[in-house]
Length: 105
Image (cartoon, rainbow, N blue to C red; front, top):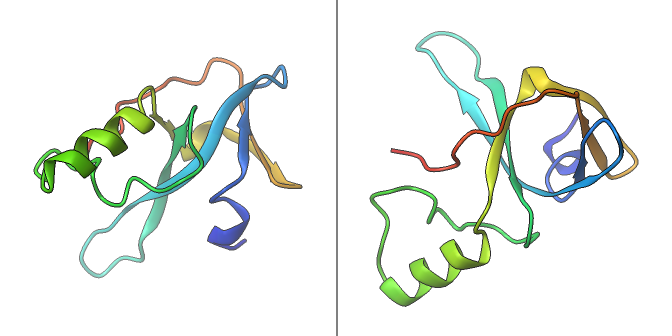
């Protein structure tokens, strides 16, 4: 699997309802261990990137930060363990998945 198959894909729940567009992924990395995909960042309103402005410490230039945070309002993380299927430009998450805040420290 390639990241290009995931980023830009339409995220759907188990019932086929649109959740948004996958705009980024999150990896976990421990020294000496391969990076592990742990979550997908889904934006319900935009298919574009956060450009790093989901990080709490990034807030300049202020107008761009405010615009991108507004544009991606409602964005959330879905754990990789909650992904049921990927294919045909879609990512399907399992019933009972949980939404997590997208902000990075």
